[in-house]
Structure formats: structure tokens, C-alpha cells
Image 1: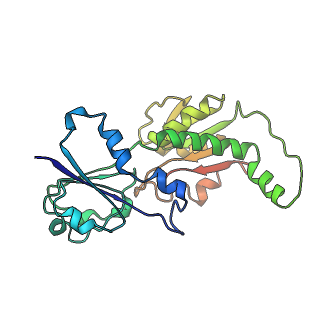
Image 2: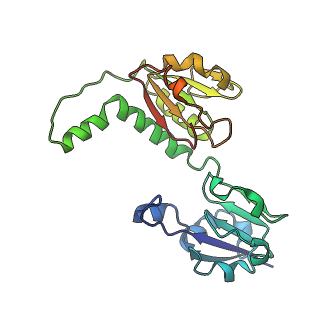
Image 3: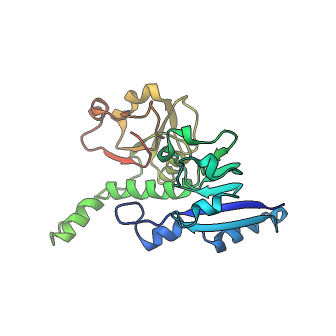
Length: 252
């Protein structure tokens, strides 16, 4: 007996992220993409029955017999009756806060997410952001648009200090990327756990002691009660007036 998998894609509209054709392609699972990935698991050959739709075009009819749902955003109301055979929901993104509270999740259904899927891109984005701030790129672009061609210079970034708050898959990837340029990386996590790329790591309770040293702060924290408002007005006041701040996480 085969495994019925339903893939629900989302069309990205103006005002949501992303809202470009390229963004939609990156975040969508086509039949070709699914079959290409499935070839890496030859033991499943011939065992998967896959349906794919967009938004809610065929959601209700497809979910009646679905064992697995692969999606990001989907109707959660009365899911037990809509999908009586459902056993597993896999969220194709890392974040699941848009589905909270989880009171809708039927008993016996497993919910998983793509934790770490954005690590490589987050490292690239973090490195790019630090270099843009260090090289005055926002000011350069603003001046260019205003036809104000003023020369702006910056010294090499080696020797500068960056404090990375949250050293999980996203922050850890950014720390490794930035450290390759000779930047002194101080990591911050709950337990002071060592992290590749960090010269030292302190606990969250010690955050105040390292903020004054930062030329840049990169926040990569999840959305939890402990992280909400972590970089408040008081802590911002501990930074150098020239410090730059990058937030690639869900809270700060």
C-alpha cells in the first residue's frame, strides 16, 4: 500500500514575502523537484503517491486520503475531519510561529520542520550585511541615488569585533563566515557552549559584558519569551555610538 503525500505550495502575493517570481520558485515544490529528491531514496520507489497544489485549490479533496502533508501555511481548522488519515506534517521552512498556538494539531499527528535549512544562506547573508555596514554601502547607495558622489572609505574589517547573539544554525553559520576575514567573533548563547568561528562564547546572562566591545552585533535568536526584547533600549545604550546591528533572527 502506497504512502499518500500532499504538497501544498503558496502563491506569493504583493505585500507578502517573497513577492517575486524568483522567490516563488525558490520556495515552491514542483513535481520535478519532488521526484528528483525522491530518487535519493530508492527504497521508496513506487511507494509514494504525490499530489501537488497551490494555495487551497484542491486542498480539501487531496487531504481526505493524505498520510503526509508537506507545506508551509495551510488551513488548520477541523484538520482531523478534513484529513482523517493524516500522520505527519512537515513544514518546509524553519519557523512555525505562524501556526501557533498548536491547539489545532490532531492527536497522533507528528509535526516537523526544516530546522537548519537556511544555515548556508544565513551565513552568506550575515557576512554580506556586516561587510555592507563596514564599507558604508547603505550611505553609498543613498548618495548614488541622489547623485551625490562623495568618497566614503573604510579600513579592512580584520581586527574588528562582532558579537553574535544566538549561535544556532543561523548565527553559527554567520560566525564561521565572518571569522574567516580575521574578525574577532564573540558568541552568546544560553550555556556558553563553544562554537566554531568564535574566539570565545559567553552566556546570555553575560551579554552586557561584551556589548561595549562590539563594532557590530548580529542577532540570530529564535522567537521565545526569553528573546523578546533582548536588545532593549538599555542594552542598545551599552553599544558604541558607531556600532552596527544586523538582525537575521526572529526576535531581538
